[in-house]
Length: 302
Image 1 (cartoon, rainbow, N blue to C red):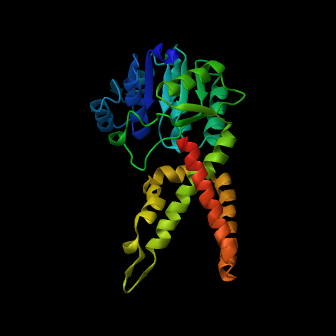
Image 2: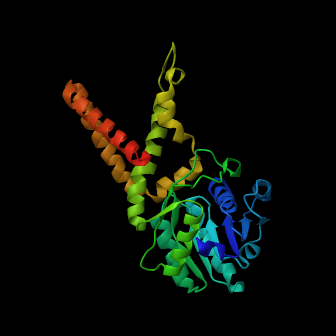
Image 3: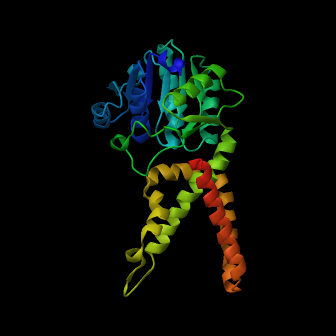
């Protein structure tokens, strides 16, 4: 935490929901340095400035990197390596050491690609630490940003054998400063666990929405009769299609395996219905109920 207060500048490249919330949280928790908003859309940057999510804004990469200590990359996951390439090309004019980190929901492709980029250019002034704050919303943009978004939320950091220990400490300190609880995983373990916990549920919510939307008779549409259960189950399907397409394709190997698991489970349940195996159906439902109740207890601490 003290390490964060020693930083002069933190640059947030992409001041949307996550980047804007980070900027607001830094201010709320007393960060004394300068929060720099970097991006290409001046209108969005001006909105971030008006919301006090950043102190200064710029569309110029050299200005965004000047004397900064951390750059937090907040674009869609498919664009993170490209952003790093731009930084590598620009960093020759900056002598200060910069630690790069990201907030992407996939890690293996991003981390391994960026490590290869940095090694190929032998850029000693840059380090990278993969990151994924487990907080967010189906809403997008800095207008939805919140200074408390990261409080008590897990932030997964994904160091490898190539990660600089001092860079890891700096990014760990950053997330602790805004109230998050850092948790270390390998990039591959991250993608497996988050693929199951986050990516698969989003896919199922989207497929469920489309399935129900296609069911209608001359008396009406199924969507017209949905209630809170459907809305709770499918809320996350309102997320950005562009963002989630990138996440699904970058974590495709994990997702393909999980889809096989789901298809297998649905096929088994179909058999139970066909054979009217009520005892086994009830057992499966009870197993899920117990799991959910235990999860709520563990999260709530009661």
